[in-house]
Every structure is written in C-alpha cells, then in structure tokens.
Image 1 (cartoon, helix red, strand yellow):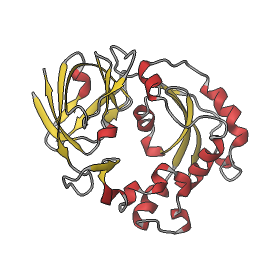
Image 2 (cartoon, rainbow, N blue to C red):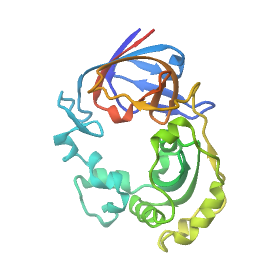
Image 3 (cartoon, rainbow, N blue to C red):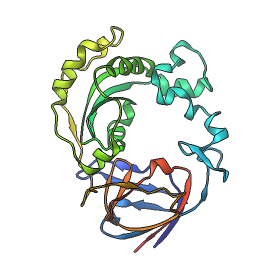
Image 4 (spheres, rainbow, N blue to C red):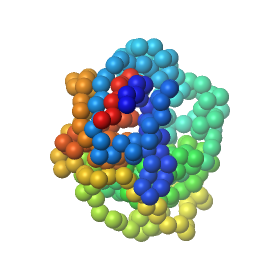
Length: 264
C-alpha cells in the first residue's frame, strides 16, 4: 500500500497502548497497525500548512512568510508568559488570541527524560503529554488564561527543568518518580496570583506507548539529507517513529513535508 500526503503531527488516542494516526487529505493510517512492518518514506516536496504553497518550510510546518505573519506562530505560542489577550491587547490577531489564550490552561509536571514543567490548554490533556513522550504526568495548577500559566511556568523553571532530552526519552532510560511529592515541593514557588488555582488532591497519569524495541543509539532521519529511507517500524513514542536500525523519525519536526509512505 502507498500513501501520499503532507505531514502534520500524529493524532493520538489514549489507551493501553496509545493509538497513533497519520491523517492525510485522502488517507488515514492507524500507525500502530504498521508495527513490525517495513516502511519506505520518501520526500516529495514542501507544502506550507497555512498557505498550502510549495515553499520551503521554515519552522513549525510553515513557510518563512507565514511563520512571521500568522497568529498560530506568534512568540506567545512558545512563551505563554507573553500572552496579552487578557489585557485586550493584540499581537497579530486579537480574535484568535482571545479564543486560544482566554480559556483554561494547565501547568503540569511530566516525566519523559526527567521531570519537567510545561503549559498546555486544558483541552490538550493528555495529548500534550503523549506528544512529549512522557510516561507519567500530573497537573499542578489550572488557571483561566494562558498568561497566568506562563508566569507560573517561568517561576517554576528556576527549580525544575523545562526541556526534554529526546535521546533519553527514546531510549527509555527513565525512572519513575513521585510526581505528587514534586508537586507539593514546588507549591512554595507558585506566584501569588496563581496560588488560588493550585490543585491539591490529584494523582499522576501513567501513559503506555506502543514500542516493541527501543533504540540503543537513536539517530534522527533528516529527509533533506536522506530523501528516501526504508526500515522496519518497531515503536512509536512522543511524535517519533522508531525503526529497527536505531533510526528515529520526528513526524512533528517534519510538518509541511509531503511524503510518500509505502508499507511492505
């Protein structure tokens, strides 16, 4: 079977294990069903996720022009503390910014390669944790807007990490930790304006990824340098496809790339 389409991040459904889906314009693949099968991935062309033009992808699946123009790629996406919609101030598109920023947000702890703090919209739990390859996570604070979540994250970053080591995550060289204890330890550092939203009594969420074999020395597939690759799929974790020869492919990092995928 052959499938052709523009890559966007895999859709997920939490379960035992998590189910992964590649969604193209004319095709829909349950990636779990491809485990232990040989896949061929070939780069075809670029297609910006916003303007749909065949322009070289710059970042986050967008061409250069779109990345610097559309609200979906504004600085507050990666740095929520820069959100201004709660002040009725526009960055690029106030209607969009109010829609996204003025809704419940979660500040959380996740353990993927180590314990890290992060921010996501409440509607993205547990999707955000799955995308990061976290095998356990817990909510710390639920606030009414993105700005409050951002300033809380900034305050906590002085006391806990905010980055994932992708190699450690993929090799599964991680240990279980007591996230409830971490939550309670970090409570003292939560800003006063966010303290009323601290979550006192909850338990951590555990996640199970569909992996038959973890890589020992993961090497990342770069479609620009290697436009054609073949390998046996052995697992899916985070937004990575894991192959038998230690090759790993980050689907999200290749958003906006049109690929041809052949199974078998």
